[in-house]
Length: 291
Length: 269
Image (cartoon, rainbow over the protein chains, first blue to last red):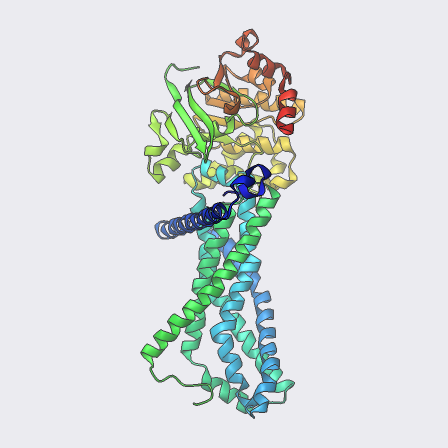
């Protein structure tokens, strides 16, 4: 990347045309690096997938990984889910009451939890709690030559370190998502009935009316993609960690940032795709307010 | 006993990372049973050379053979099998933080061999005695060990597969003189008892003189002319003092010479 414009002895070259060409060159360098990075992470993911199908990781390694990634994430996901359901109730209540639709709150809370907030919150928690920890752990292993030591002993680091983490993210994120949804539904119902005085019978009836099996599939399908992306990005950032404490810190931070941005972008794309699939199967979709 | 045929053979080896060339046309043959010390300043490519031998770093040019086979031509499975013929002692031991000492030592066996647990335990205890560590360390984690203990656990882990060659990366760096000598003695005992070929990358002239049959000195490429060989010295340790190359004598005596002036010029200029 050129930084020539900042040096006094190169100012003679600093005409407008030269600056534009330098800018284009810098932009090109950034694009090339991005494409290289994308290619590199794709090969990394492909290698992990090949290893996953050619030889499963050792049972104890997989169980340890699943415990750390799945079981230990459950409490925090449950708390976040419950409070998100309650916050949704608080935020939506005034608007719905103005139209006399407060008994419909269950429909909007549950639909939001099943389709959007459940999978996105579970994935965000996984990226923040587990993804950055995985990147930092693998980054430390890279910096302290533990990954080289694995290779030197004839073990494949992708098989030994990445596959269990990737599989754990992939297999356990649906459970975390279901937990987030469940707690969100409970939290929303609790707040509406206990604090907002909405009749439980009406709340419950409307909740059931608007939520279908498809909504559960919708959320879980999204979560599987999010889990795979978090697993790969976090392991990749750890494997490609720069030297030193700063490198490990940067690996952990970038793992979360890249995972989160990917989750948000994929959420939009998956929502569009899944809605199209739904409309293709059931052309007349029920509306929240129209039955 | 040193054999005539090379077990490790590097021919015209070059390694480049991006725009930086670290090794250029380096040729070294190590016969089976020999103990080779590779010395040289920091940044001259010693560790890269060691990692190239075991295939952790891919050469940009040249040939690296172990027992007549090149890593680049092997399948994933064969690379894995070939690597079990090496033991690698890393600079800071590179023990797995999340495993106990026992799990660290047994790791290669668990990965590659299906021998029963009792045999594996026996092999581990025997090696632990060999490197002078008590059984009480087995349940400890690497973070609970001193630097010298970590290096000895690293050596035990490197030897558990009964390798044909052991590669040591700065085995005495960061240790006190007595523990350094303990490691030197262990390397000699390992060579004699297990009849391994050894390549030792070191700055420590005591190690090079005491343990090695042969010393190779590498020099950083950025301080060499384009047509100069990167190997400044190749011979027995006893011949080091007779070298007429000022760069070799400066290094073995640990003299800064004109280096301070060069560094000041670099910093100022």
